[in-house]
Length: 307
Image (cartoon, rainbow, N blue to C red; front, side, top):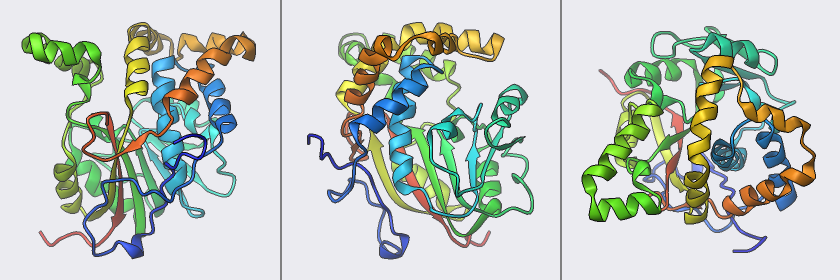
């Protein structure tokens, strides 16, 4: 679609109040400049491994499209809060929760953050949030019902929930897995299980299940889009093996070794930044696209159904 590619999505809840969730991205949407994407890529490459950078930049450009212009925002599973250093949020109050005390200690340098188990307690009692973001976090919560119920309690009237969650078949994507599914399905399924186990994915549902589950807790799904392309998936899989080592090192030290890249000049990082920008071209696809590795789910807070 070229530089004018359309993949920023603006959702106006009042226009789709009585409709089924949209599952295909509209055409009349806006894209950030290549320069903006590369700036984000340089920052993230100095913070995290390339495979994670690819995923986070995808989510960043998508969530910027549906962000509210005012009111407090809650980041569920905020980690170290680094994501917010790349976003223009001077006009918003940003709160974050996570179960890791070490991550929250870092996040407090960037946002208002608190150690919280969202499945057991309501985040920041007394504060009502206009927007709640789950950046690939809620699939890691064993008690998803408790989490969604507590988030609904924390939501302001008409609040927006933006969730990124893996598609059920994300771990079967990639050229190797596709070949194994055809020729050695037991090996492919074992590799899929290992990936989901490593990343601690408790919930891998299709879009209809997520829609029903959210509705049970007072969230009306307005849109569900897929995220991903063959180019982004190829690069993600290519750089995933060395990233495992960085994930494990962070568990011990609290930081990715990629932090050392802050001492590397832009000229040396330029090829990787351009790869990231190329990979995230046209990342929004139909929810049922075979290249979709994640859903972006946009829901609105409504009155929960009577129990």
